[in-house]
Length: 204
Image (cartoon, rainbow, N blue to C red; front, side):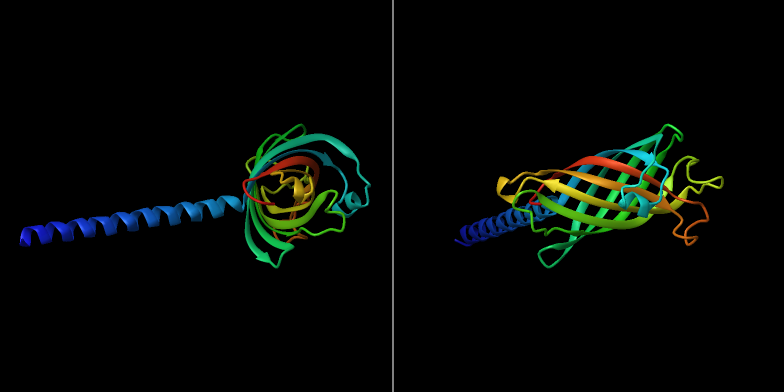
């Protein structure tokens, strides 16, 4: 009789442990799913413009023969209400033309997602800043180029209306490096005008 009770107790304990393991695995999978739902990947190509950031915003650009291609990963970190988000981004850029090297960038981005015409074209605008490290000499930036600079981006993205439930969006971006008026370095900066695509693993 005692043996039967022990066996029943052991079976019950094993069943409880199995349920706990299944529950833990389900919770972990749910957590991973939520993380991926906030994550996106992107790629863009860009060309150097020998004009300042403000001039580009005024559509005053002089395109030069130097290019980059970049791939990156971003993740929504916090929502300030429904329409303002904080994102974290990392990207790797490959330069060719007047300079030839790899570049590593990271940024914290603020993105605004609400515009009056979203029912026609779902639009968002973002601005971000963070560190940048060139793995070669960024010769177009100055006669005293610095491998370590600040990275800054300004972006406007376009997607089908939310009713279309699309995971893709296209964007225009300014890819900027500079010393932030001597705070990071004394070298001047560079601006690249980019076009790209982004894929969201979850809702935009």
